[in-house]
Image 1: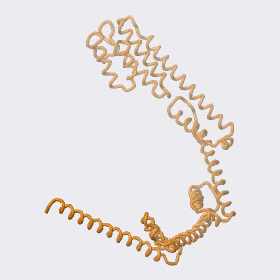
Image 2 (image 1 turned 30 degrees about the vertical axis):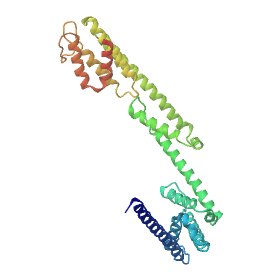
Image 3 (image 1 turned 180 degrees about the vertical axis):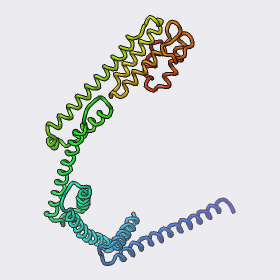
Image 4 (image 1 turned 45 degrees about the vertical axis):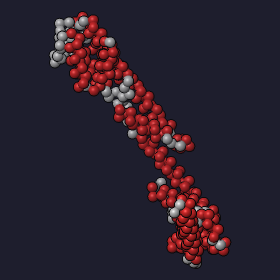
Length: 334
């Protein structure tokens, strides 16, 4: 068998295969079309039930899956599907509108409770989900009940929130520069600022003055605490006989005090001020005097600035708040 004969046989086999594939596709498409027709016929009488809805959806999905072969479904058959969908939606509109009406009338007396808010919210969500036709089936009176309930509930919640704002302000109590005072004042200010502008009028001027006075008192207490803390460092520095220290160690002490004051200025409450003062004293007492000793009897020195730095570093690692001071010292030395 020569090459030409082999080519003829291959062409014939390819033609047979192609023809078989086409027949298979045609059979498959015919089966899909038949399935759509059967599903449409199976819809039957349209009722507002889950079973009927599922039959309509199945027929619609099968029809859409035909793609370019939708034209094989007759216009009459498609009309049956579309009529079923329209009828079901009309029945659904009636039932769903009735359920919305029931939810609205179940709201009852409006108060500021969570449960009342849930009833109102459920009715609103259900109403918004209706089709335009369904919304037209909810009477104007029932819709007005829903809208008035929403407005009244919001008003009651706002008044309730106003009461909580007043309570937060009155809970501030005695003001100092502590974190506890700051937390109370911040909570009251945030609550007041979050009030709707139209409801801030319900916080009387006397109550609002408690808040603004507290804010001013806190700022003053914090400022005084910082100034007192820095004065304490100055007093400690004045108590030292600087002639007992070398020029280098005098500079180191000045750097410790300077860093301490910077740490004090960075505080937003007074709680940590005493710790900063004590840490500064610890650092200074670890600095060597001219005679090779330090003011701290427990401090170990190893001769010269290097040994002093080692001792100072050991103390710093044990006291968290002295980090800033230590960094400042090292920078000053460089």
